Length: 192
Image 1 (cartoon, rainbow, N blue to C red):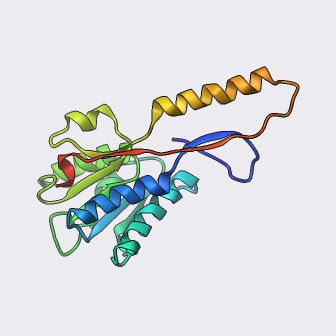
Image 2 (image 1 turned 135 degrees about the vertical axis):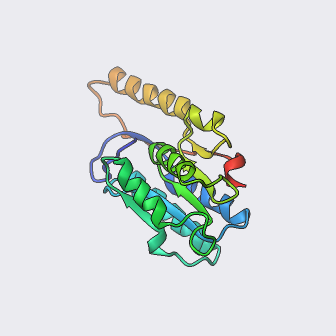
């Protein structure tokens, strides 16, 4: 998880979380889903706030009312019981409640998918799923999970460049680099 502090003048390389989340939720909307939940962490980190912002903006831009009850904030401790309760509150499988869910982290996604399966629901027939991050488990899951993939190699490459510049110019003041990279949305069978 990338953490930035916007008030501190320092180098950083981040993903455009707003755009990536927007694209993932728009994908669900384009598939015909209107009641889309968001499961995120209850922390005051820019990346989590930006992912919720992207989720909300996608709904607003598609004339879908943002229902705050469909935004579930999980404690950072990632307690499975909390997530199970939150997913059950969404009443997946009840088309009057929620049709799809966007998980803001892969850990939440993996636990959420496990919960969906444990209550006897079928992805994507009972509920569609999209998640931020793209761990290998998503590729081999049944069905494979639609995901936002962060450009990890590019993040690493840019980090090394910034670090090299700092080491090379120890005595000179180096321009602060604020690099924002684009994530890639990978549609798979979990989103219908």
